[in-house]
Length: 143
Ligand SMILES: [Zn+2]
Image 1: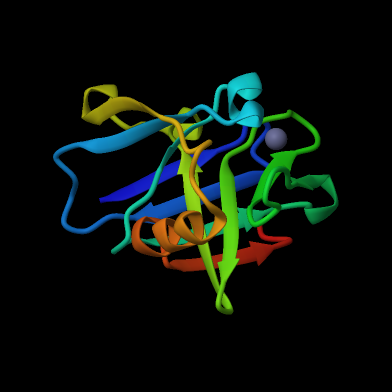
Image 2: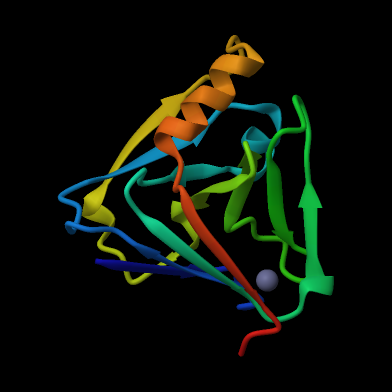
């Protein structure tokens, strides 16, 4: 299954390859202070691969907070946050926002809330390596 999503104005778009096709997609409402404010709900597949196309990189604001180990890619034009990345041991990992999905049957989404506030930094990075999308490619200036 190819899951497509983008920010509201289309500057940041992604295609997530998810094989075999999911019978359900975890949708994790993150309770960190930033995600609480913008309503971040994330998913990832540790066997998936992600392609992110950015039309105008100058219109992407990368925001980091807390442990500063993850970058939220905020569209500076429309304000949507379609993707978060984290570089771990030289590899780029990512999660994508289920709110940015286009054309995905909402009944596939299994919504849950997660509270990672008590998690230590080492545990957090290890969890990302286990759960986040491990194949991430950015294409900048793409149509
Ligand atoms: Zn946008």
